[in-house]
Length: 324
Ligand SMILES: C[S@@+](CC[C@H](N)C(=O)[O-])C[C@H]1O[C@@H](n2cnc3c(N)ncnc32)[C@H](O)[C@@H]1O
Image (cartoon, rainbow, N blue to C red; front, top):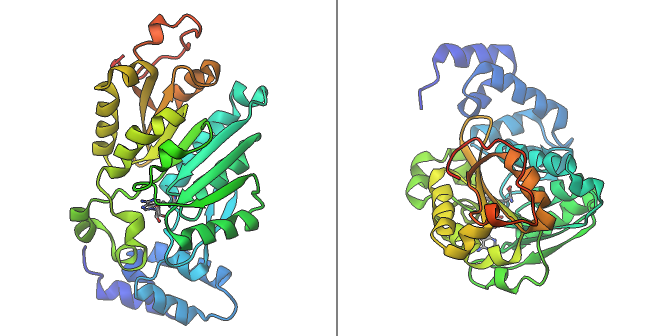
């Protein structure tokens, strides 16, 4: 990371008191001024701006100081010990809610059940439940702090049609034992590789956000394929790079039964980074998901049984890739 110039530090401290303390995290004057304004506007009354700038100088994340983060129309309470929702997650979640809301699923008032694994603050489950009429949800996390915070977030955002479960998803067969039929399975699992954690993760994240929420190899994606696919009609799992997408796609394409019924897509975020691996069954909700979900991202594998299916007409959508 390039060093900050002395002239920049001087300029910042002349502009506003303590502004220079924000530079190590913000890296430039414009961003520092923006953050300074947020701090002065939203800081809890008992805290001083000097205290807040000193916290930022020590790399404490802004959301832990301000105690919240906007997520779509929601205001999500944030607290140390639970991962702060990211804009990348907000982006695909809001787009998913819009895609479903614009579809015939909603026109026909078809009830949808959402299951959100690795829920953390509950941001994904709450935003989808808030945005999709006729939906109910279950949100699961192993962390007590996360489940307690998700409960507070439900109350704060007046989202009531859901329940929270504290459970270790990976070691308890949570997928196979899940008692309900799931229409939409979502998850933002820990996916930062151990070897990348110290090298690539910035200090405010490495020092202050829970490692449990961040570090993981492919085990959550393996769990998705092994234990959840039989319970759900569609899934949307956040990814950090194409390795996780490749893993899920390969597992599905290598399995004779799975490749016949599952279509697989990849969604990029607005920074051009691979962000979501998603899939939908050709039998889902009378084939309606089949018509709406291709437009969510780029279809990389279309269920091979699709052409033989007479019950569902092939969607009138031009697929962006020719892996079909
Ligand atoms: C990347 S965070 C995602 C939080 C939230 N969904 C979001 O998008 O901001 C991953 C979450 O998974 C939880 N977690 C990690 N391992 C888990 C496991 N084996 N079973 C259940 N939850 C787990 C962590 O506690 C953390 O809240």
